[in-house]
Image 1 (spheres, rainbow, N blue to C red):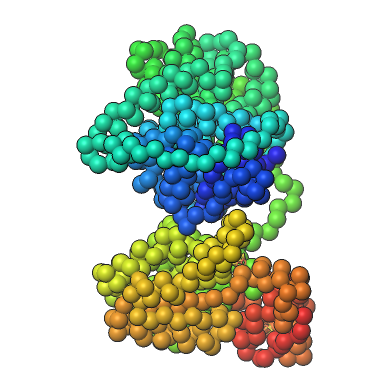
Image 2: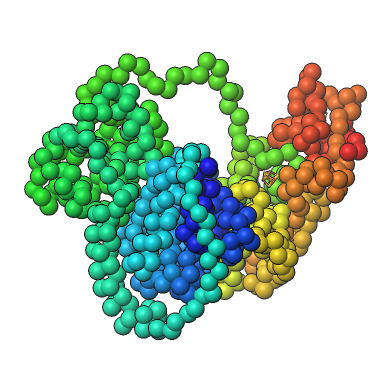
Length: 607
Ligand code: SF4
Ligand code: SF4
């Protein structure tokens, strides 16, 4: 079972009745798996507009005595954190489990953050599994613990666990079918200052009780007796087991496995430290456990030497070889050879590219043409989504990109403080997620910039989940489409045009008009560039729903100048015998190459 499927399975075995989230790698499959089971097990499942809303919907279910799960990637917790920090004050009735899927090494994320640190900051208990089996079991334990202490609980995972497979012993699935009931207790649920002060005291007291509970958790264990200790958590524990085997050092250390990370079970850890000469803490990213263990030693006035990041990398995903090397050094053992050998044949490096026919490529190309035609020196803030690949040559249409929705807020400031033409780009789902308040800000605190909304009708980057413009939700219900143009106008944009990015001329002239509009200081000008994701187009053409008019090269006219490849970067264009050929499997017939070829050598060629 995939780690994420094991998490979903654990939730159903625990009788979850509501599951919410916002798509984000590496967490997405949790909600998608639950959606597939939703009808059979009476679970309400939704992709919410953002993580804060997802947490609020799940929290409402937990207030109503239902078990609820909310899943998101690590940066999503930042969005949800405003609600999270107060949700721990009100507490819950039904169990509430927040799964934070962290992404060490930034495989598909804008940063590398360790969400275990939310534990002490928000006073939320944090647990971390070390295998798909434990992920399933720990979810059930988390629901039980959440209900016992009336507290939301965070289960932190990392990419390697979310996306790795392992054998999982299954338990019975539960169909609860309970109706939610909301019991009014305003003084315990309304965080007015007078109430919040009392809630904070309750919260701190609860955390103490949770610590005692974790001291006896079956998910923590000690094995071996030695005055040399190793402490490990999460996947690092599996790597340690492997490394000890390789080093033939199983009998030389005493190993403490921790799955309950905040509050760290002090009694268990301090009794483990007793009589230890030295201890190595092995964990991914921050020295979270290491710092606690050091502080416990300090409290005990212990002579035990505690190490961690001196031997184990602070940056990037932990690998079995990094653990092996760190452990070998710590134990003064010689390694015969490095485990990770160089591959005999290395794949040639390729920059990441937008798919062939991606409408974003045409939109970025149109933006660059419009800027060239108007001879302006533009600044390009962008956002989180496939269109982030517009950063790479030959498009190079992104100067700054931070987090969901930030392109528009940055555009407000950049236009105001530089007086230059600013062209922000954002996707339809990201606009709904966090872009709208920033666009309102541009009217409220007048700022004039061009906003191009790249609308492909779904969340393409994370696997084609529906967005509010899709007209259908995760439960498969037909729902009203929320059009970005209506929202943009309601936010105060006095210029708003919808274009088809495959129509280059129309798109360029709309962006030129938008530039003229903002140069007169008339407030934000919005261009919605609407076209289905190229992968959707290819699928629909394979299913016979649409007929694509593809392109081919007229070899008599082609002189092999390579302008089509150099200007568009489309991966369907392939150099061949000093000329170019077009890959029929991936070409969607967007026609951008036809527009850019100076020798009219690219022609329509049927399906
Ligand atoms: S998945 Fe869709 S939106 Fe993303 S790069 Fe490919 S075609 Fe473009
Ligand atoms: S731009 Fe036209 S002429 Fe030049 S290589 Fe491409 S198809 Fe051939």
